[in-house]
Image (cartoon, rainbow over the protein chains, first blue to last red):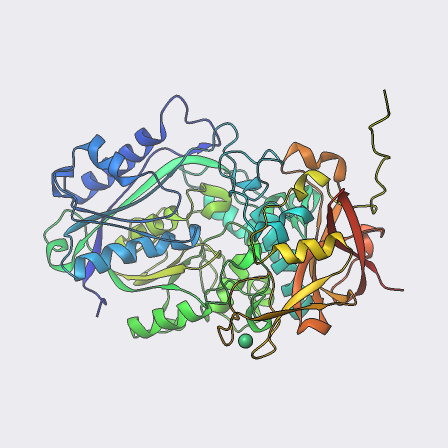
Length: 396
Length: 152
Ligand SMILES: [Zn+2]
């Protein structure tokens, strides 16, 4: 059993930049700064590190190990999929530690979207000029790309529209996610978007992929975040108050599959985040329920996917996330379920979800900028995407 | 010198650029595209249990059998969901805006869905549940892509 066997003992980050502005630093330099920062936070050094728990798109850990001088790597694992593995990369670290394969495991994400490296055209292919983050041509892609469905935001718009059709969700509900998240970014020096966002600003913004407008999309950033995990025993002797991995889960329905790039998921959960079965296993491992969650850091690449995760994690009933957020429930500090207290991917920085882990750790240490009073249990999720999607329940 | 320029192709209004339809089929998807070039919409159906599947793939996801029949469709469908795209994520798409991507459910093929476009229609006319019918888009001499328009 993984419950409470491992703890996060260090978090670190590079500065966050708007897309392309981290130059002339290199991606390797960004991640090195984050890792060294996280180790320093923990009171450890690179000589203590013996493992990597990662998810797709990160820099090769072999390069990181040779560059930083890690003496011996005993475990290096990566969750497949995409941004869905963000929270679960720390779960992978915990699994390696609980099984005795490694002792001090680093999870990280780093990205530098300079030049043509833009996620917004991930599925455009070379004909479309999609650039270096583009998926290679595939027989399956032939059934999507010719329709001009070329980027994740366009794809999630289709899930959002279905949710609106089934449940009466409105653009005002999406706006509430954008605005509440922006409010949380305003007092944070690390946040890239600190100007208030009004409902008028939201509705005046240009439409990108109806029903999603500019403010329904996350930022495009450069930067890196690292998290250090070790055994619960060792954690007690380190510099910071341990943040225990209460539970972790990853995966999803097999027929969720590649999800947004095939659109043949079962009707029963088409308009969802794909997290529903993962959420159930997460709570089972933890022995707690949604009512025990004090703060939720939900991967917010696009506003409607925050709504669907609120439902899939049982923070509100299925189909009722619109009215739930309309009632102010996710606002900090007044709502019953503060969400993305750091400003999320939408307004702080998009480091593919690792800022969410860092924020949950700070909440449970009691050192967050937007501190939720007496926060004991935090939920962190990876991005709704192809499987595996993943999540963490952390406790102080 | 003879004129080797083909006559300009007549394509449905609102269809995305032909450059996106450079295909990379494998042995399981190729029959779909060969039929499409002949303006026949076909969907694979499991010979063992009768389940339809898309895109064409080597195994039935219900019974794991490999045998398939290619079942020709009328092309009548329903819009399951959609998005109207107003922003060009790559320069190629600039002249195509706005365009409507529809996920079309085929009731005669067990509800399998195709990712396609609503063409020859006002983009603002699209809605979930709207009945649509098939329109062939000849994007190249030997490539046709199924698109959909409002059923009348
Ligand atoms: Zn079958």
